[in-house]
Length: 463
Image (tube, rainbow, N blue to C red; front, side):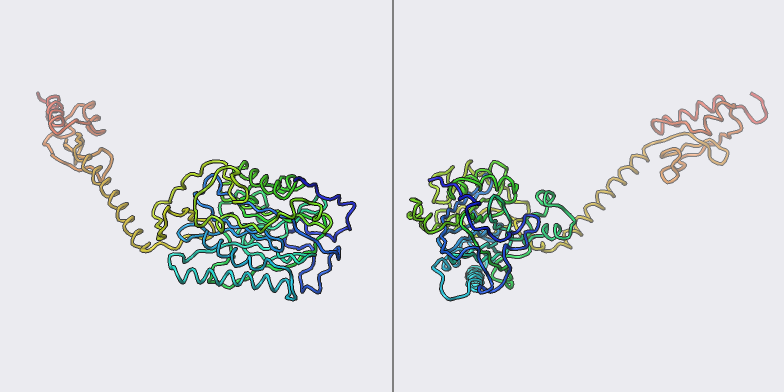
């Protein structure tokens, strides 16, 4: 069922939201739940849809997503030698425990606890299988209590709020390029094509201390919440996302966002979670709302099957691959210790640089020896060739045969001297000898000397 968003003019005016130019500012102040005032006091509901796609390049889906009546989440796992699909699915299965009606616990505290539980579960996975060392995942979580959402964010998956026709990014990427943007060194457009745009600075890895961004946003009827992995946000402009989010049901919007990401050339997995904020009356009037069940998509849903599916073949299975995926090439010299059949996606450079190679100094030394050897061979070959060359010239007033290259002192030396004085030669022959007469061989040089001697004039001027 396609349901247009409620007319913003007919709704209570929400407080000022964040702007795209300053995504680090949440829609309402960060603080305890008691400090957060919403634009409405009525109980609200979420109508949601989640979808994840392996994409057109990746062999495996390392994204995981979740959508339920109280919780929305997107996790994007690190690839390469460590199984990112395990990290993201582990995180989602821990976070989904938050999907229950709100109780007395502080909303932000529940999000923090959920992220820490996911962090610890990943650590347990690594302890049980050392081959997973280095695995990690992003996490963007929105926990709903009927009037507001508490956001927990770490990594470069993103959260957006579409309100009254305006799209606002409500999370800030924990990435190297975002730090360059914050410093004013590059623009948002330049960040999209920066060679290190996928290098993140924070993630859930079971090792480092979890330091997520935490804040809360009061919701209003007609709002639309959108969470996605960087497979979507990395290729879609804000205007394009806003256009898709401006109409249709959450299911329509989520599927179209995935399709648009693939059409825009995304080479990554793509995961999108879209949720509409409804009043209780709107939810009751929506026939599809009563059929909603929690949705698990991506690696968390497909981990056992591990087989990519085709275009929109069962939306709720969470895979919408438009083209058959192709194997990514494994960079030369990169080894994989994972025992998996089929092999996992070799997404080596996803979020962190490769570990330093072993014996780097030895490889450099061998390379230097090889280069020096090639240079020596080249010089030796050039010297050998020069010593096969001959010419006739002058040495201490006498005609002589030289071996080497005329005019290059280091590659030229007297090979034979004669008793033919330069002064005994006619003027023309003398000039030729002084300049140097090239010869094809020693025999040719000797014939040249004999020819010159035949034209020589004795010192006394007699024939």
